[in-house]
Length: 304
Image (cartoon, rainbow, N blue to C red; front, side, top):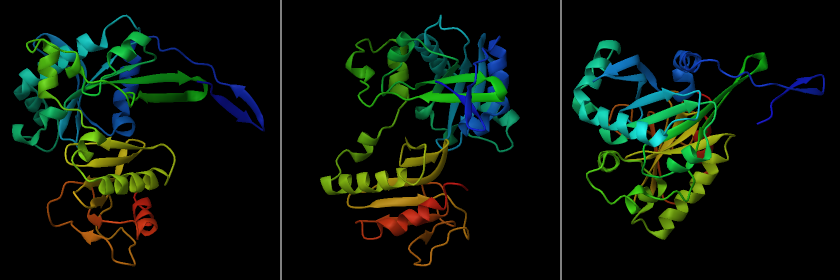
């Protein structure tokens, strides 16, 4: 990656400033964890059963715990350590909940947590090809995030996406008693394909049309498949969700009641009833007749 500073039309390249210690990465990341990841910090240096976890965080969107580990070198196995820590979490769930309740303002019960969406994030200035390839399985709850700092106080953070053709570990894992098999059985990485499974072709086509329209509303927009719905994100924050029904799509717009400008009154106020997605407004579509108008509603939530 090449970064430049524009000085009156003349570009000067910014040089990378290597991190001297892993602790530098950890301190920077934890201090800005909500801005970077949209996660809540639970505990720094969380020790359990003689294991020290760098950062314990919580994902309010998926109601799940996230372990974050920081590395400055490439001489380690992300899969071995990741699987070990995930197994540790799933074996000692009570300890994680106790730690959360001692540090966060709102108490958490074991039943409040979706343990299937537990995951671990490795943060490092770079990852080698073996680390990228060994973690590139669609059902492995391990993510790699690159972090680099440059001159002029510039920091670049890049979550590495798994490839669209990433295989399933279930296809190659034969030993059901292994640590990695236990993790696969107890965690779940959700995908678009699973949300579309069993849906009519017309509904799948409708979803693709609306998905592409949403992603074209701005730059760096992405999707985040979850258990019941698929989130649309801007800089990691969900601004809308969609649930794929049999013959229609149900959208939620992540705005509080009274914040949406909806002259056609197409959106339903769901602020006082239970619902899956984020926000207080719900829209159901079964065709593309109001596509542009729906996009104008969803766009209002992107920068909020």
